[in-house]
Length: 397
Image (cartoon, rainbow, N blue to C red; front, side, top):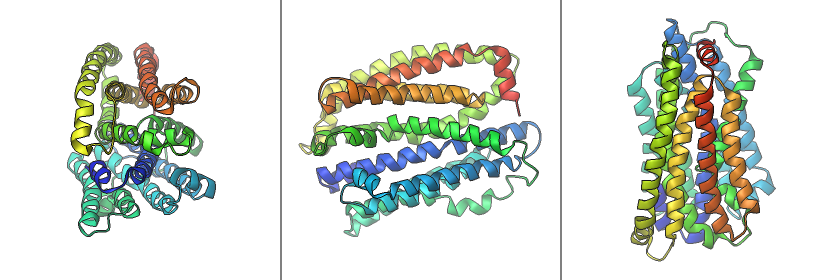
C-alpha cells in the first residue's frame, strides 16, 4: 500500500530514491531480525525446561543494538550518504533513527512468540504496519507528501514497540547467562551477517543495484525497483514472522524421536512444491504483470513480461530458502546459514558485475539465478545433516 501511494505521489526520479531508502531501511531491519529468531529459540528452549530465558536474552539484544548503532553511524559518512541518497542527505538521518529502533521491536516480538503470547505478537505486528500507514496517509492528506516526510512515516514504524514495553517486562529472569559473551557474539554476528546477505537480495536489492549502476540510470531502473519492492516486501512482512514461528517449531520437532526423518521429508516435499508453485507464479506474472503495472501507473512505469516472470520465480525461491534456513537456525548451525546466503548474495553481485548486457538485464538475471542456486544449497544442507548432530544441536544449550 505504501509503495503504491509513493509511486503515485512522487516523480519517477524521487520514487527511485524513495525505493532505495525503503530497500535500505527494510534491508538493514531484516539484517537485524535474527535477534527475534534467537530470542524465540531461547524462550522455547527455556519453556521446555520449565523456566524463563536468562540474561543470555539481554546479551543477545545488546549485541544487535550495537550493530544497529554502527550501521546508523556509517550511513552518516558523507561519501556513503551521497551515493545512496544523492542530494536528499536528510534521508540518512531518518534511516538511522529507524534502524536504531529496530532491535527493541524484534526483541519484543521474539520474546512474545517464544512465550506463546500469540495475541501480543500479532498486535505488535499490526502496530508496526499501522503506524506507517496512518502517518503516510496523514501526511498525504495534509499536503506534506514530500519525499522526506514519506520516509519519516516509514521509519516511524520501527518505534511501534513503545506501547508494548511494559508488557515485555518479566519475560526474562535475571539469572546468570548460560552462554558466555564470546559464543553469543560469534553466533549473533554470524546470524546478522547471514541476514544482511539475505536483505541484499530481498528488499535491499534496489540499493545494491543502485550502488553498481551507472549514474543517471534511475529512469531505466525505476520500474524494476518498484516491481522488486512490490513483490518482495510482502515476502519480508509475511515470511519473517513465519520464519520466527518455524524456529521454535523445529526445536520441538527435533526433540521427538523421528524428528530428523520428518525434516528430511520436509526438504523433499519443499523442493517439489517450490518447483510447481514457482513455475505457476512465473507464468501468471509473465501474462498479468505488465498489464497490472499499466493499470496502476499508466505510462509512468513500464516493466516487461520477462522481468515480471523472473521476479515471480525468484520470489518463490527466496521464500522457500528462508523457510529452509529456519531449520538450520533452529539447529544453531550458524556457519551453514551464512553459507547459504553468501552463495545467494555473492552470485547475484557477480551476475550484476560480470554478465553481459545492460544494467536492467543484469539486475533481473541476478535476481533470478542467485535464489535458485541458494535454494538448492539450503535444501541439500537441511536434508544431509546427520541425525546425531541435528539432535545434539537442537537440544544443546
